[in-house]
Image 1 (tube, rainbow, N blue to C red):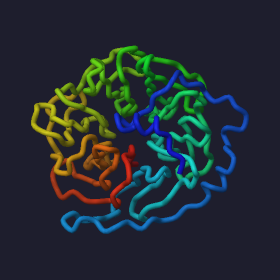
Image 2 (image 1 turned 120 degrees about the horizontal axis):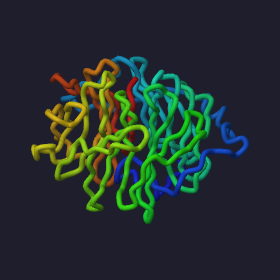
Image 3 (image 1 turned 180 degrees about the vertical axis):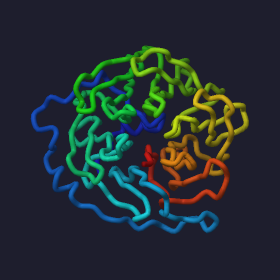
Length: 327
């Protein structure tokens, strides 16, 4: 696999990319990169290593989770794991469309990391951005018509962009020359969630903004890093990772009201992770997550009920962090 050191360094900070202003793809033929169709036609199952004896391992989950491993994209669900991509590039940070029929992801298959979409089974790859910089995470609006993502450059700061679902109509909706901005999601409630370091001191906080880039509001602000924000599909709850706890009560995954109030720990970290990308189950009752350790390696993927119950292991340990999305 090709590996981009600049991308890896940004991923270690927060699952997002850095780069100059992105450019919507206008290059003839970029919607069908050479070799993509034949490469994506091959799919298969992976054999997982045994889980910890104290944590049950199962793929018996409702729905399907998409994730990345070793630079390729996979899904996992009741049928086990399925590999979606088999390229020499680095594919990462996948997210489902609202209907679950498409996946948006980042890939450096054409040089720098840009955004692509493909059908749910891995076919019909289409390039959306064509930028000298890098875009590493994106998400759809609840109606599936728009896509938002963030970029960061030093110097230059962070920016948030929105475009149509086909990559046209690219517009910068927010910028802060003094802040790092990481894209989290375009939430079911219509807001765009971001992890922002406004002070430049390395401490991330969760913010929400309206789709036009206005009304930026801090929703989780603690002394440490707060990231991985995800609003439940029914819009009633917010889940997030905090490395010190919203009330200083220790690292873990917390669930709160959408505005960040009344946080409750659903998982208190016992693994020594420093960030945990996560996703809600379609029925709003569970959270899937992957922990990242210092240095970039990752834990297995786990599923945790928000109202108690055993944590279950869904995959073997992953070699590096990945965004995950559950439909």
